[in-house]
Image 1 (tube, helix red, strand yellow):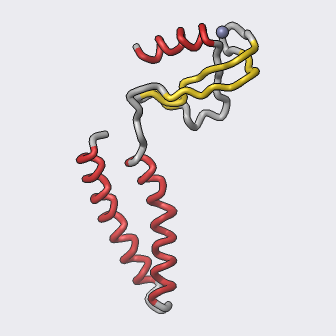
Image 2: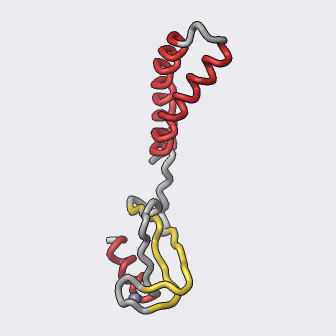
Length: 116
Ligand SMILES: [Zn+2]
Protein backbone atom coordinates (compact mmCIF):
# COMPACT_ATOMS: atom_id res chain seq x y z
CA UNK A 1 0.00 0.00 0.00
CA UNK A 2 1.31 3.42 -0.95
CA UNK A 3 2.17 5.76 1.92
CA UNK A 4 -0.27 8.50 0.81
CA UNK A 5 -3.14 5.97 0.69
CA UNK A 6 -2.10 4.59 4.07
CA UNK A 7 -1.96 8.11 5.51
CA UNK A 8 -5.43 8.90 4.16
CA UNK A 9 -6.88 5.66 5.58
CA UNK A 10 -5.25 6.43 8.90
CA UNK A 11 -6.86 9.89 9.03
CA UNK A 12 -10.26 8.37 8.14
CA UNK A 13 -9.78 5.76 10.85
CA UNK A 14 -9.11 8.54 13.41
CA UNK A 15 -12.40 10.14 12.44
CA UNK A 16 -14.14 6.79 12.93
CA UNK A 17 -12.93 6.76 16.51
CA UNK A 18 -14.61 10.15 17.10
CA UNK A 19 -18.23 8.88 17.38
CA UNK A 20 -17.11 5.98 19.59
CA UNK A 21 -15.32 8.38 21.94
CA UNK A 22 -18.27 10.78 21.91
CA UNK A 23 -20.85 8.06 22.67
CA UNK A 24 -18.78 6.44 25.42
CA UNK A 25 -17.98 9.80 27.02
CA UNK A 26 -21.67 10.72 26.95
CA UNK A 27 -22.65 7.42 28.61
CA UNK A 28 -19.91 7.86 31.21
CA UNK A 29 -20.65 11.55 31.75
CA UNK A 30 -21.36 10.91 35.41
CA UNK A 31 -17.79 9.66 35.90
CA UNK A 32 -14.63 11.66 36.44
CA UNK A 33 -13.45 12.93 33.01
CA UNK A 34 -10.08 11.22 33.34
CA UNK A 35 -11.60 7.78 34.09
CA UNK A 36 -14.24 8.19 31.39
CA UNK A 37 -11.51 9.04 28.85
CA UNK A 38 -9.41 6.06 29.92
CA UNK A 39 -12.38 3.72 29.44
CA UNK A 40 -13.30 5.34 26.10
CA UNK A 41 -9.73 4.94 24.85
CA UNK A 42 -9.65 1.35 26.04
CA UNK A 43 -12.79 0.57 24.04
CA UNK A 44 -11.31 2.41 21.03
CA UNK A 45 -8.06 0.50 21.36
CA UNK A 46 -9.86 -2.86 21.46
CA UNK A 47 -11.57 -2.01 18.17
CA UNK A 48 -8.91 -0.09 16.31
CA UNK A 49 -6.00 -2.41 17.06
CA UNK A 50 -7.43 -4.73 14.39
CA UNK A 51 -8.13 -1.95 11.91
CA UNK A 52 -4.65 -0.45 12.35
CA UNK A 53 -3.16 -3.90 11.88
CA UNK A 54 -4.73 -4.04 8.42
CA UNK A 55 -3.71 -0.48 7.53
CA UNK A 56 -0.09 -1.01 8.57
CA UNK A 57 0.31 -4.49 7.18
CA UNK A 58 3.64 -4.51 5.45
CA UNK A 59 3.97 -6.20 2.10
CA UNK A 60 7.45 -7.24 1.20
CA UNK A 61 8.84 -7.09 -2.33
CA UNK A 62 11.42 -9.72 -1.42
CA UNK A 63 10.53 -13.06 0.20
CA UNK A 64 10.94 -13.27 3.96
CA UNK A 65 12.37 -16.71 4.77
CA UNK A 66 12.27 -18.73 7.97
CA UNK A 67 14.87 -21.44 8.40
CA UNK A 68 14.60 -24.36 10.85
CA UNK A 69 17.00 -27.15 11.69
CA UNK A 70 15.95 -30.83 11.72
CA UNK A 71 12.57 -30.55 10.08
CA UNK A 72 10.85 -32.88 7.66
CA UNK A 73 10.38 -31.54 4.14
CA UNK A 74 6.64 -31.18 3.44
CA UNK A 75 7.16 -32.53 -0.10
CA UNK A 76 9.96 -35.13 -0.21
CA UNK A 77 9.97 -35.93 3.57
CA UNK A 78 13.77 -35.53 3.76
CA UNK A 79 14.87 -34.48 7.26
CA UNK A 80 17.33 -31.63 7.61
CA UNK A 81 17.47 -27.90 7.31
CA UNK A 82 14.06 -26.60 6.28
CA UNK A 83 13.05 -23.39 4.60
CA UNK A 84 9.75 -21.61 4.20
CA UNK A 85 8.59 -18.27 2.87
CA UNK A 86 6.77 -16.41 5.64
CA UNK A 87 5.58 -13.53 3.48
CA UNK A 88 6.12 -12.22 0.02
CA UNK A 89 3.82 -9.63 -1.55
CA UNK A 90 0.25 -10.91 -1.19
CA UNK A 91 1.49 -14.32 -0.02
CA UNK A 92 1.32 -14.27 3.76
CA UNK A 93 1.81 -17.27 6.04
CA UNK A 94 2.97 -15.27 9.06
CA UNK A 95 -0.06 -16.43 11.10
CA UNK A 96 0.23 -20.04 9.90
CA UNK A 97 -0.40 -22.36 12.85
CA UNK A 98 1.18 -25.34 11.06
CA UNK A 99 3.97 -23.90 8.92
CA UNK A 100 5.36 -26.21 6.23
CA UNK A 101 9.10 -26.34 5.82
CA UNK A 102 10.83 -27.73 2.77
CA UNK A 103 14.33 -28.85 1.93
CA UNK A 104 16.43 -26.49 -0.19
CA UNK A 105 15.42 -28.10 -3.53
CA UNK A 106 11.70 -28.34 -2.74
CA UNK A 107 11.60 -24.82 -1.26
CA UNK A 108 12.96 -23.40 -4.52
CA UNK A 109 10.27 -25.29 -6.47
CA UNK A 110 7.64 -23.96 -4.06
CA UNK A 111 9.06 -20.44 -4.38
CA UNK A 112 8.63 -20.61 -8.15
CA UNK A 113 4.94 -21.48 -7.74
CA UNK A 114 4.45 -18.49 -5.43
CA UNK A 115 6.26 -16.02 -7.67
CA UNK A 116 4.09 -16.88 -10.68
ZN1 LIG B 1 12.13 -31.75 -0.18
